[in-house]
Length: 248
Image 1 (cartoon, rainbow, N blue to C red):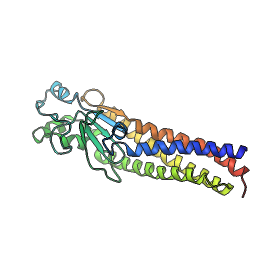
Image 2 (cartoon, rainbow, N blue to C red):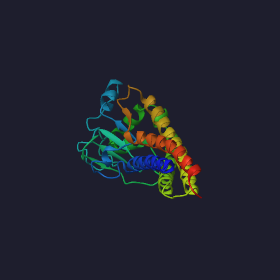
Image 3 (cartoon, one colour):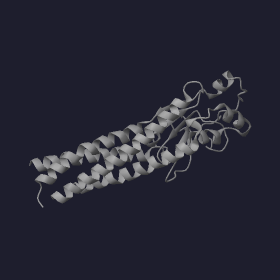
Image 4 (spheres, one colour):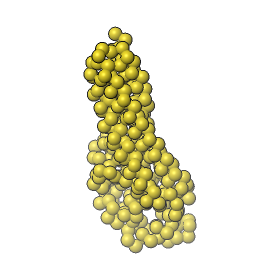
C-alpha cells in the first residue's frame, strides 16, 4: 500500500511538471487566450520615444506602429509591447488579440534588439540604433548563443518529464527506478535551462536600466519551468522508495 502511495505521489508531481512545461512550450504559438498570455519575457517600449527626446535626439513622430496588428518585423513601426515564447515572439498589445507574431521556429533564439530594429521605420532606424546602449542588451551574439542553449535544455527537459511520468505507470521496481532517473535528468535539464534564461534576462534588464524607456519583465513561462524543475526534483524520492519496495 505504501508503495502505491509513493508511486502516486511521484506520478502526481511529474504530471504537474509535465503540464507546466507544456504550457511553457505553447506560449505565444497562437493568438488564443491561453497561448497569448504565456511568455518567457516581455519588453515594454512605450517610453522609448520620450527617452530619445530627453537625450537630445530627434525622435520621429512615426516611431510606433499606428496599428498594433500590422505585420511584425516589416518596418511598420515599433510595437508597444513584445512578448517572447520558446519558439517565436509577438508584438502589439500586452494582452488581447491586437498584435502580430513572427512564424514559430525550432531552435529559436532570443534577440530583442533586432526584433526592435526590424519594426523601426527605415528613417528612424539609425537614430534608435545609436541611442540604444552598447552592452548586453544589444549583444545579439551573446543572447542568441545562450538562449539557444536554454532552448535545447528546456526542450529536452520537456521530453524527459513526459518519459518520467509515463515510466511511472510500470508496476515493477525497474520501471520505478527508470522513472526516478528520467525525473533526475529532466530536473537537471530544466533547472540549467531556466537558470540560463533567468541569467540572460536579468543581465539584459540591468543593462537598459531606467534611462532608455524600455522595461523588460520576466514572464510566467519562466516560472512554469522553475516550478516544473521543483516538481521533478520532489518526484525522485517517491519513485526511488517505490523502486525499493516494488516487485521485480
